[in-house]
Image 1 (tube, one colour):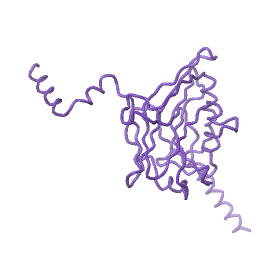
Image 2 (cartoon, helix red, strand yellow):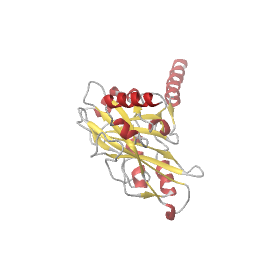
Image 3 (cartoon, helix red, strand yellow):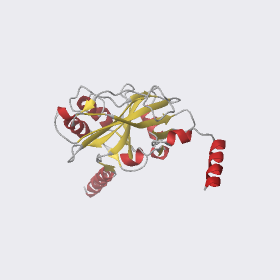
Image 4 (cartoon, one colour):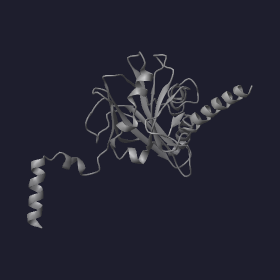
Length: 252
């Protein structure tokens, strides 16, 4: 009996440890999720990318991504679905929402959206959409977590549940992705500081994510909308920049 009690304590301790390793959904963090409904996946892969303010500045996010976890969710299937969501559920005085949409044009030009999102959103829609994400089973550690409860599938995409992100927002952030392919997804943002449909706000394009599986390892990056004036400088050749520097120095 004593051995049985010890074993039970060990099991309970392991369960508690696994639970404490997880973190609840954090407002204005961005979450990248991979799910495999069609392939009868037994887990979702969810990555906490961190604070949106840091992500939308742009950069390489590959270190946040685990190819092994992605492969375990992909299984024998040829493709799965991936997207990014985030937001703040009505904290005064504003609510906000982030979501991705499939980018199909203007690849390589972060100054122009490659998808369209002509809808507007109200404070209540922002709040309800983000509330639908509140039970995501996410990890605070780099590399994300495999979620055996399939919370991405249950809380983000299904429109027939009445309480998923897609049900509340009317928008699906997920796009199909497979090995040997590249997925481009535009990131859109909306915020509303006042109640009521009369104050509905449009979505703003912030840049795009690239998930590239064409190399030996996955590359995950975010390309932000360039700051005003930087697009022209980026288009100047190295030789021209040298000339401009010399001319500027000569005139000083």
